[in-house]
Length: 476
Image (cartoon, rainbow, N blue to C red; front, side):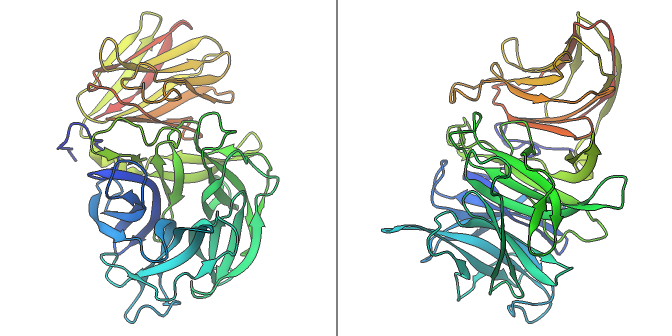
């Protein structure tokens, strides 16, 4: 499928609102052959403000249609993050004819006595076109905790009930319900586990099969707000373990990071993807609270990551969350060029056309030296991906990538460290303002914004480690 770019200052492949501010993805759900993406939205400005739920739909995860605002602030407060589910069996009693959509979200209200956050419901009988707020809102509140938000809800077959994971300051609280209206506290997760360098936000909990086995493990995703202890701003950790319908038990105490880049935050997964599809698909907010209000876009601010299909893989005795771009992405590239070239210190260049670029490279992994990949926009503007094989380190350098002076942090290098590899496999998707990089078949991820003034001209590769045979493809 070809892509026609209407506005040269907007992304090709990544969802962004036509105007004004966007942050966390909310209410990701599949229903009646459509993927629904709700999101935190300020319709009256390009910086964070009173939150609504924006809304977009897609049949293929890439081509999104922006719809009217779904949820507006009311007497209970503004509309913070949450989730959406299909109530297949009308457990709520909201639906007379067949299943319908239910949104579970946080009401946020600032009062004279402090911040009040509570959980509320809205429902749709017309596949998400219009929404009715439940007259009994809120359905879950806390007498004193000002951080009581971001409900992610799912149906747990084994215990035959709804389960909610909720961000509660420095922990995740787990609740259950038979009808989405009356909730019972079950357990709390997070004390002395993982990173606590910022407030915990935007949890998710789901089961995945471990690749090559018949074993299922549960995954808890927790985003961490921009706290003083986080050197590079907000980011996302995850845990693997078990869940019995009441409590999640992690099999490790240290934080595992979902992404080593600075610009993947608040990611959550779609509810109700059909069982015959069976994929677990995540979308994140492509920004960082350290500079989200300052990024240099015109009239709009923020975009989402590409969807990522999640799987689990055992790596050197540890269970890792692995990410892949979905198969739907392939339809957007018409032309494929095979690459099989030897790279040395003199370097090679790969010409590209205007538009998004999909790059997949494979090479035997050297034991020492460096390999450099440069995304060249002009003689002065370039982004560099540098592999240091002595240190087993990838550095993502965007200090000369275009507009960077809006944030001191933005121009600092991003790094990820990789284990011993015999083959170096790298996949990148380069869009107008972003690079999404997956290493070793998605075992490592690095997501980064960039703001060049010109279109990508070519990609160059060079190495100081002798001759290296590069194989792969470029898709455009």
